[in-house]
Amino acid sequence: MNSKDPIHDDENRRQDPKEADPNEAEAVWTYRGYRLRPSEFTTAMVHFFRAEIQRANLWRTRLDTTTNWAVVATGASLTIAFAQSGFHGVILLNVLLVTIFLVIESRRYRYYELWSSRVRLMETDFYAAMLVPPFHPADDWAEALAESLLHPNFPISMLEALGRRLRRNYIYIYFILVIAWFTKISLFPSAVTNWSDFTARASIGALSGIVVTIVVLIFISSLIILAISTVGLQQASGEVLPKFSLDIGIPVTSESAKESTKRPWFRHSRRRRQLLALIITDRAKEVSTTIFRDMNRGVTSLHGTGMYTGKSHEVLLCAVTITEVGHIKALVCEADPKAFLIVIPAQEVLGTGFIPLQTTNTIAT
Image (tube, rainbow, N blue to C red; front, side):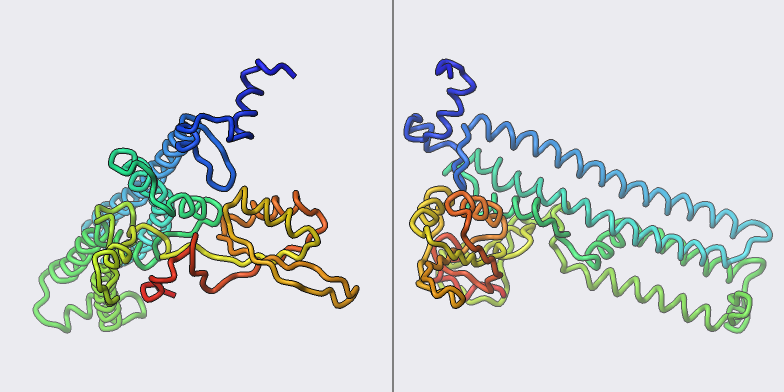
């Protein structure tokens, strides 16, 4: 092999961090054993950032599309309803159609928020960190981003999405439709003089005017309740909201404790999903050394006995996060292909590398 080959020489430098420049070794990305130069990592993040922005913009355009459908449908229904022989039922039919558009748009809004939350996470915890001291990303931003990629979940609920799209766009469309419906019944073909005339005109086929009016009033009340009750839901990353929020109701006794209760509002959860890996192996030293070196995770050894063979084995315990499962599988297979690996969910992991034990009173289960 030609040692002067720049490609192979570059690979050798990555595999042997001891030969790297001390200043560069401090700056490279070494999380879970990966060793990339700053330029390589930054280039990858830039391309990923651009891809997520493009995807978010695409879904943002789809939101405008459903709103345009609702506006066009509303204009057409009002034109038909207020024609010389128009029927007010067309307006109610359009209300149903607009509601379907609202549900479709809310579902699209949740997808948009998924891409947008990743963009905001990179903006606040990676790019912003490059501009101010101490010039490094937040401690858990990579885990949060990796978990979103490997196990994507909608960052906001359907209820919040419905409420936001209703308050931003559809409340005005519904307002116009309701006013048009009352106007059509009250003034066309002539003005009504009493409640009986109003209910008589509000009838639709076999449905009496009283039933139709009650259904309309219940629907209006439901929209108002939905719009008001979801105002306090602020998990959407696409909205202009503060980056951090303080948890309400948690006792805070010091400035450091106050800082520890702050969490980015666009994070999916207060903590990463945590697991416990049980490794039954006859090569405990090799397996644990590999995990120490490449994952920087602690390992605890217990003695076990196989009840079928009566043979003694070492049982290694290692707490990991959801995004580290694939890595620990590969490392165990490399160190001991005959090992037995069990990965089980952990309710809570406290200590170094996870949630500090001193902040257990601030953990939301």
